[in-house]
Length: 136
Image (cartoon, rainbow, N blue to C red; front, top):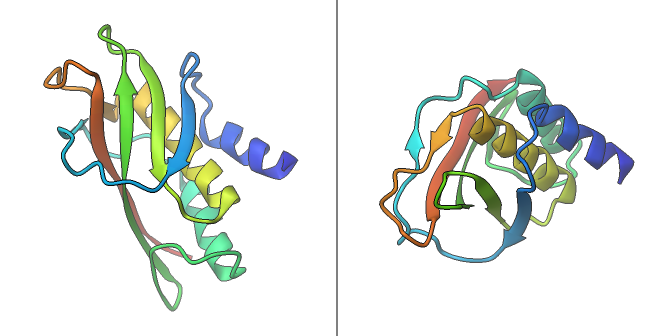
């Protein structure tokens, strides 16, 4: 558990106020999309750790072919009217360490401006896509 927390903190060096990360089974395809400005703040350490998790067969994530991991998943995010992130919801992966690493990465990326709400949803809910290709 300490390792999971340490990895999540490593992946999220920028505090996101009191935002939380949760996992759930759900379909948020009906939500408006977040504006994606690029993966500028996606850490190589995050991609490497997720690759290691699949290498260690802790859980199955994305598509693995030899030394390549292709990961793509959707998530939901809630923002206050002033644009402050309050919650990120990931799909249940049945892999707590990976969920923590991805959640921490998303908190950092959103705090850094990689994803932005558009103002289209007065209730503050949006969907985003998190993905990368990594060769280990």
